[in-house]
Image (cartoon, rainbow over all chains, first blue to last red; front, top):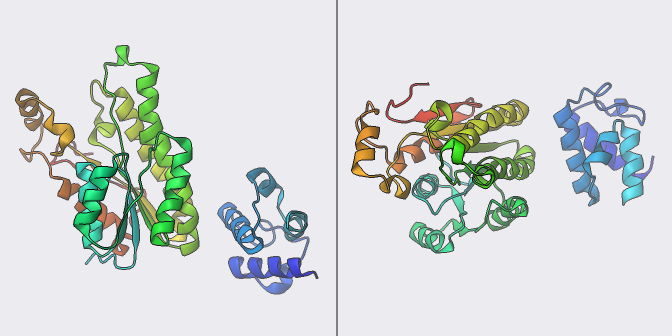
Length: 77
Length: 245
């Protein structure tokens, strides 16, 4: 896993309080990791802070899985 | 009781009678306060009277950009905004049939849209801190209506629905959103009333007197305190019994 993926994973584990092995690229924040809609807003905020990027609302809506987040952030940093 | 030591509070409309009293009450309970308003003179005077832990952050809330900027300025001055008191408000009274689009819109912009924008901007920090207090100052007329104040009453009633919706969304994050609805309070706004008008108003108030700004401030202080952590989506009416709703 790349550095970005590791950092994303760490944020997700810390924020949602889920087991590390459940946070795989295909895992959906809401369906697999038990996030509610407000959690996803907070995750996006945490990603913005960690990576020093802006994630616009329309992009944030497309980030449904851990892999989506990693892909978006790789393209943005 | 009601110790706000270490907390930071932004009060809008702090140059007015009620806003000034709210800022004083929060400050006296130990909070660091940021005083906002359009008139810098009275804000500076109040900050000086309070001594330490007081910052002046002027803003004109009818300007869309100003709201996000105000939260940034207040957070820069104080380190955070833990408590947001949306007290700023304007009136543009007119009979409904004579009310212009402009009179309607100005009141909506400041009294309702301004509060939406400020609250949205302040939530980010509160969510991260897992603690926050938003207190919106509404009015008895939002619940009862008032001739000549169709715009004002609509905006104030709108705040109640907005506050309840937001209260749902953020309750699990330790953030409460409540309203304080003053009745007739002795301020510059009510000083303009004639004795005849005052007499008519007083006859409708069971307490037989107008309220004091301090009595609104005390309600805000309670809702801003850690002790009120289980109160959210509520409206606290402070009106001498004028409307028991």
